[in-house]
Amino acid sequence: MRRTAATLLLSCLFVALGSVVAAPASACSCVPQTTQQYFERADAVFTAHLVSREEPVGTVVSSADPALHVFAVDTVFKGTAQTSQEVLSLRPGPPADSS
Image (cartoon, rainbow, N blue to C red; front, side, top):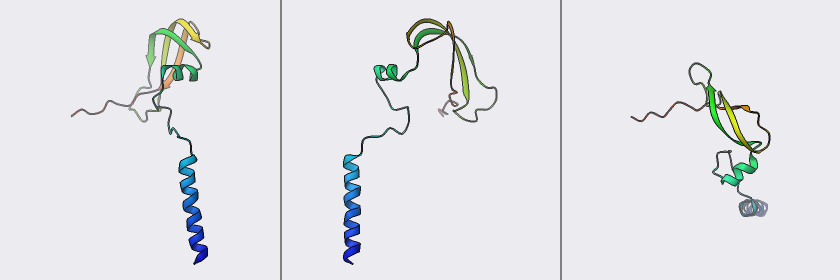
């Protein structure tokens, strides 16, 4: 009985200590950030205008389906970008039904 109580008390202590010491976590990259934080995480930052966009034809199977965007680059602020820069991103899902 004494051993069970000690084990239970020790377990509660570890759980309490873990919740106090543990750092906050972000489960996905969609956590809001500042413009400066986005800039620091980016491989390349540039201004451009969209020349074309290509999405796979057919039914949206997943929001992870790729979409290819081609940009005409004006100014590069960070990293390397070509005059005509291709950017592959996730395809957006279908719009939510508003009815």
